Image 1: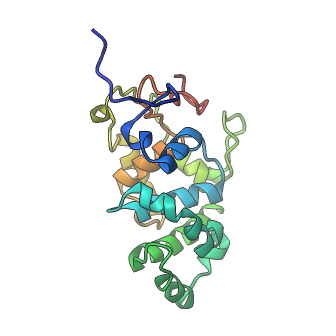
Image 2 (image 1 turned 30 degrees about the vertical axis):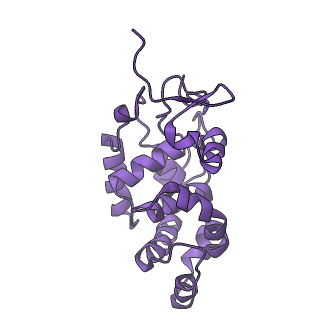
Length: 214
């Protein structure tokens, strides 16, 4: 008997999870970006903050607003965002293109400042012989919580929403001053940037990151 699977086979003959099978924007994101390694400081900070903004909302909402978020937050360049003050917060609260949640906006600024602080930690220098070319600081910290094994789900119900590693990453980030970084949010971040591979078995994207075998 063939094991159950939640894969949806598209007109192109490729298998995708239901969330990526119908909406063209989500399908493009799934096919080209989700689960691929993000190794730059600016890139990891952006994904971390956008996952925080997504809390309580759909990812499609955030993805559609991502160009506006990038414009409003100076491309998530840590030094620029870290310097934001009351005037910039007022500007962002008046920007209808983004999610106007003061706590999340203030968390993004706090996260940029915490990211800058990580640069001074010699323990977060990239490993000399790592498989990935990680920028120092935040990327090294996040990727240090990569598990020894990744899930191999066949159905959506088999995909975990947290893990021991996401709980530990959440705890460490909070200790270092980051906000909106709960275990579920950090698990989603780890999925999105390739730290784990939760593509369904049989998906044409499983193993595509090069970090994990299919």
